[in-house]
Length: 249
Image 1 (cartoon, helix red, strand yellow):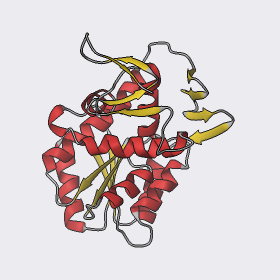
Image 2 (cartoon, helix red, strand yellow):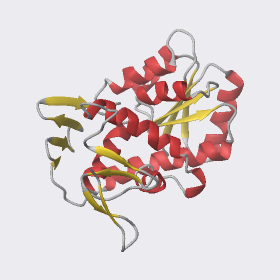
Image 3 (cartoon, one colour):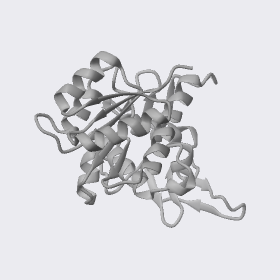
Image 4 (cartoon, one colour):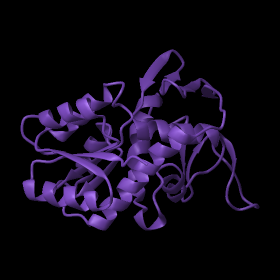
């Protein structure tokens, strides 16, 4: 089996050295770059399976690199894990809104980093190996998701989704009228084990998804919040309890 290729883009030489050797010890093929311009060029030339990307860098910051990657057809689906010393909610939202799949704040635990990388790569592999037939377009009311182009259409409006937004919307469309907890979404959509369950990751991706597909993100009509339960696409639903039925207004 060919080793997964990981591209590290960060302007801290000591951290890049440590990351490179840690991931090489795990059997990955690792490339490195110390600024966004060189990192983007390496990605275009060598097609990595995953990118670990710092946000604050000279010449071209991580968000700009991420946006550039998402605009390229052959790189748009590559999972991106942001690293940053910035830990505010606004910074995390900015990173995820730029198209990242996950976000780790420096300093971080290398064991957690490796676990998140495994989950992101496993998610990509599952998409590539999936052989079960499914409709080419998934539909809920006037919301359509083309599983081949990965574009969502709301009426006549087309929306480009990041990989994580696509995965979330795909999951909701194939589990309509089911309440999905944050923990369930972390495990079944993102592939994270329970001990890595950062529910904030789900909230940020759903918030970004709502801003793209909802007419009024503050009053969502598609992906609704069920207090103390999670999220739902649709109306009448069944919860995990056989006795509980919720009617979402």
